Length: 160
Ligand SMILES: [Zn+2]
Image 1 (cartoon, helix red, strand yellow):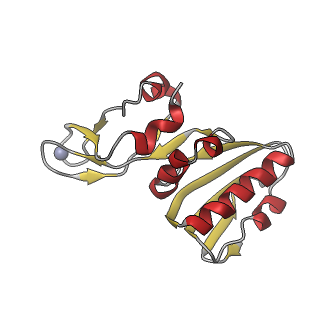
Image 2 (image 1 turned 90 degrees about the vertical axis):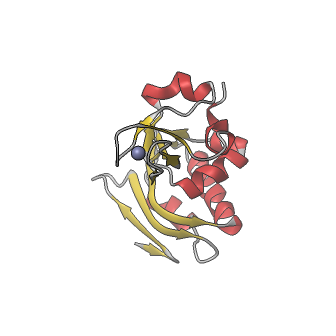
């Protein structure tokens, strides 16, 4: 399914998992997607989302609201970096869905490599609550990488 500049694949047999790839911007009406998803537990994967603007965020809020009104519980997987920083700006919005995993920018202090690994929330919950990014191994040299941005831009949503 294509909605504006966004490709949407429903990847579970029952259509309860939506994989979004592309841009969430003024070309996208996400309300269309809400109608395609079943009631109950739904999962939205935004690993392939590369751009979100303010109109896109309004569409995202509409989608979340529409799903909640239908009684859905929403799990977000592999939240794109560009969406994660937005969710951290809108605290109430982040509480409407459970973030299972997300991308964050990391840099290696040893070799300077940059990466955007996926961080699993479950096993790192206590650390994330304490507003600390879990250490990630550098894909180039294996040293422990540090978060390459202000923690509040990614971790505010996990505050206890
Ligand atoms: Zn390195």
